[in-house]
Length: 359
Image (tube, rainbow, N blue to C red; front, top):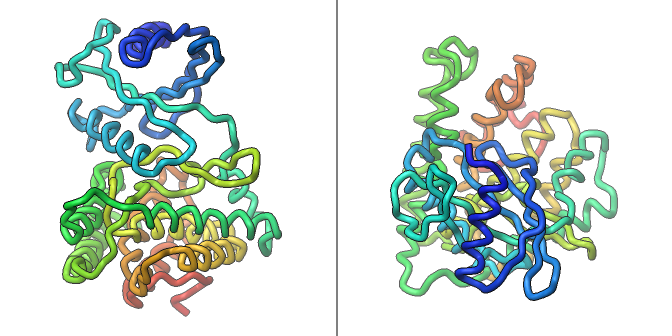
């Protein structure tokens, strides 16, 4: 594992080559994600203090088994930051070899890649969403926040995609990326114990895969008429920060640069819905409705079928929420609720944002 001091030296050299003189003061490793390491760099640039954020992929399995996978992940994320035009700037990617030295050729073998972004100290929306579990309804601040989040996503989805894009193919690709997500649909589902009472070999694993694939196949027929938009790719509370003025902005763009807007909408609604079922709190469903009202208000294109297309995303979120290594050994009765909820959304052909939809 490359040590922070070596990463700091390589980063300083890379920045100087590309942008001019940078004086690195400190570098420290900070909590990263499930699949990544993260670092905060304090530095001086042209006499002004600046803090930058570096992240690297620590996973070397599944969808990140090849170095080219890891480079592609950061390259797509960099493109998405550029396209979104938010307050967080992405500066690029540098590579280090196994000796801890900067390598100019990003296609050289055996490299560790680092994505360089602005570091902002504002707090995560997820910290507020986590409080919903103790609430029977949203506060006025919660409502305003969810409304702003819906508006923000609509504005991202209203931005242009690259000229000449085959929009139908991009929509199909984004839907398939969800179905074939290497860290969730494939690796996680494959890692369920064979005797798991819902997603074991003889219980429901292959039924889930079949239903997901059927959903993707159905939506493929409608791809010509499905909006194609810039995406975030991992849209949920931990990737939404709140600035000093109380307004949301996005970080950690991921994997899918443009395609079906249901990829983002379904991900956000899925997290809220499964939290509602986990904690028996109606505040999460209320938040989902506020978010959707704002999203639909500010979208510049009507999209009446988006709730149907979100269904495949709910399978994806559900697989994670029922996975013991991530969320612990959840009560079997609660897992049954999750399972029934997903299947009811599937048979209904739309996301259902209320309690006990199978009754």
